[in-house]
Amino acid sequence: MSFDADPVPRGALAATSKGRSTARRAGQASSLRAHRAVPASVRQVPAALLAVLLVLYVAVPFVWMVVTSLKPAGEVLSPRPQWIPHPVAWINYVVAWRSAPFGRYFLNSFFISACETVFDLTLGAMAAYALARMEFYGKRLVFLVLLATWMVPGEVMLIPNYLTISRLHWVNTYAGLMVPWLVSVFTILLMTQYFRALPRELFEAAETDGCSPVRTLFQVVLPASKPVWVTAGLIKFIGTWNAFLWVVVVANQSSLFTLPVGLFNFSGDAGTQYHLLMAAATFSMAPLLVLFVFGQRYIVEGIARTGLK
Amino acid sequence: MTLAWRRTLSAYAMMFPALVLTAVFVVYPIGEAFVVSFLHWDMLTAANRAFVGLANYVRILRDPLFYKALVNTVCYVLLFVPCVLGLGLAAAVALNARIPGRKVMRALLLLPYVTSLAATGVLWQWIFNGQFGLLNALLAEFGLPPQNWLFNPHLTLLNLLIYGVWQNLGYVAVILLAGLQNIDRAFYEAAAVDGAGAWHKFRHITLPLLSPVLWFTWVLVTIEAFKVFLQVYVLYSGTEGPNFSGITLLYYMYEQGFSNYRMGEACAAAFILFFIIFLVTLVQLVWQRRVHVEL
Image (cartoon, rainbow over all chains, first blue to last red; front, side):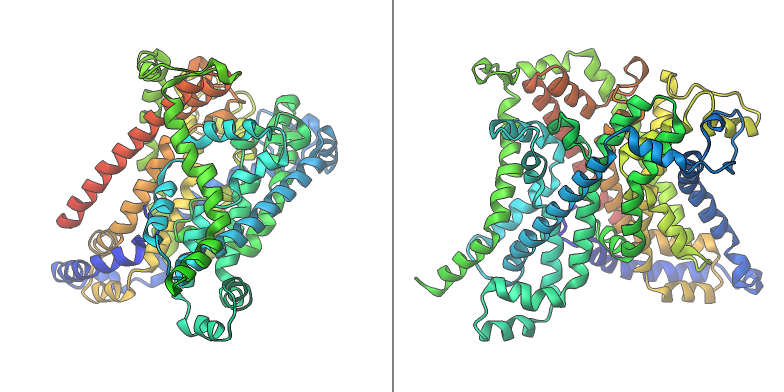
């Protein structure tokens, strides 16, 4: 699970030679078969069916959420599911929005997520620059500590971090919500890996010009490494936006709630008014859905590099 | 000052904010959790702290609720991990084929990743609704009797599986899909020339070449599965489910800390969980070596 070990490429490489021999064996074992005559499009039918089934499993609940959110109150609790709301009750969104301070929750979520992302990218990139491009004493130790902490489940730190925050009198403050998460080891490791792969000339040119590391980072490295900033930023933003437990623990007053916690609280008040609940759930995930549509490529890239928050 | 020291100084200057924050909020808490796990402490006053040795651990290991949490968590891990890996692999293989609309399908599978647990928890409460829920409507289509999903303790594990797999399927699929796309297509072309069927290709090319990624995903998913907690919390509106049927190890820790204000027991529970995860990961590491030799 160590990031630096880069399990994907190296592992694939190790398996390559074995794979070649197994592939050859597989080839020898079976002779030419009739199915080669079957056109490619037909052969893909099972794969397509399987994919569609799984996509239905994942997507239908979301569809059902939007459908429910648009139903008039009287039609929600019907024994047989109705897939077309009639008439379409846009008013649910207005009613749900007004039933709780969702505006405030939105602002909190935006503010906290944006701050954390900016800090995470800035501080993470600075650390990554040092780790990737500078020679210094204790480098191995720093690396080792970072990797080790990345492996300890974050939940172990929940209670001590809460204790730290309460000693600092930061319970029920934005500082308490944000400061512990301003830097994520994942970002540091992701960026270190990326910076290492950048051409050496890039840095040498800047150094001979007498640039300081900070200037080199932001004026030379940043323009040359935009994808990794976008990937790390998106993953951090999504993670922060969706963070739940820490907000529950640190924020006891609704003026500090983020959207997920506000929504969870609202679900207690709304009871079985599912049309309102689904409307609130829908608008609470809307900003991330927009982000997802535009940044999908980068998010997938981040996860493929095992971006676990 | 020599050049090497000057470089070291400027490197640490660059890392300073990140290192300080990591030290205060990651490294130090691990140590503090360890220390607190040997204390009796209600958190209300610093004076109420007392060293009690292993008493917290002993009390936890004698607590029937802890065993319920342990059994629930282990059952969840044993069922969740194969389900999510199997379906994730199926999705990855299917999406690796050149079928139309696969980019869109990949995006749809990944939707739960970008939605908060709070939102999806509310959504699944509605789907699991005993009277008007979508799941009961689906059962009715097959002529099956409706279930009171969220109030039947025997169904809690199943609910968590349906919800958990739904939530993580796309994430696993994306990691595995990246692994699949790393496999050289030449293998498949060679096998196709030799007339190998789909199953043969999967068994003798895909599986062995994917095994490093598959192993890695297995470890990752197992660790995540052991930490199951918030899913229960949101699905059951902040309770442990009917008759404590949804209590998990992490939920137990949370309860001890933030409901009972027993910080010592909470930290001890956290370390027991950490220890279990550590052991399991170790076993998986040993297993990996064997698998690699055999393949």
